[in-house]
Amino acid sequence: ASISKEREQAKSKSSIVTTQIQPLETFYPAEPEHQKFELKRKPFLLHLIGNLPEEELERSTVAARMNSYAAELCASRIQRQIDAKINDIIRKGWPVLRDI
Image 1 (cartoon, rainbow, N blue to C red):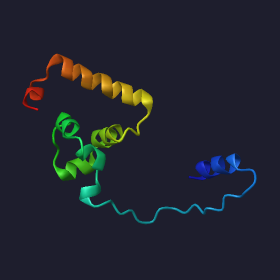
Image 2 (image 1 turned 120 degrees about the vertical axis):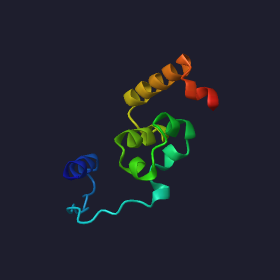
Image 3 (image 1 turned 90 degrees about the vertical axis):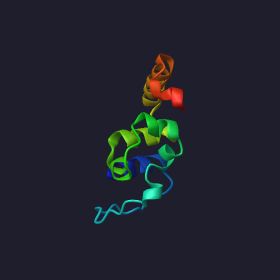
Image 4 (image 1 turned 60 degrees about the horizontal axis):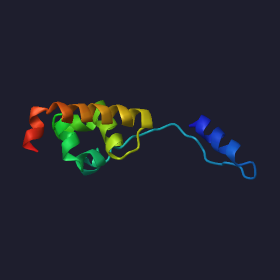
């Protein structure tokens, strides 16, 4: 966070960034309906990662990455890698795709 603050300060020579950086004391996860929101809006992507139970979906690193992919917020290199894998699955005719 300090580095981010310094970066923002460097961008603005005319004003001082006064945001205080404090250690995180307590973390409250979002409600289940807000967890992996973008991913949940794309049933095909959920299906690709195995329709995980809600608790597992919340903790899953793969689900977090796929959520950022679904929201189009991941790095373009990662976006291309995931696109390529999905296109490969579609091209090879993954059996589950016949049911969609």
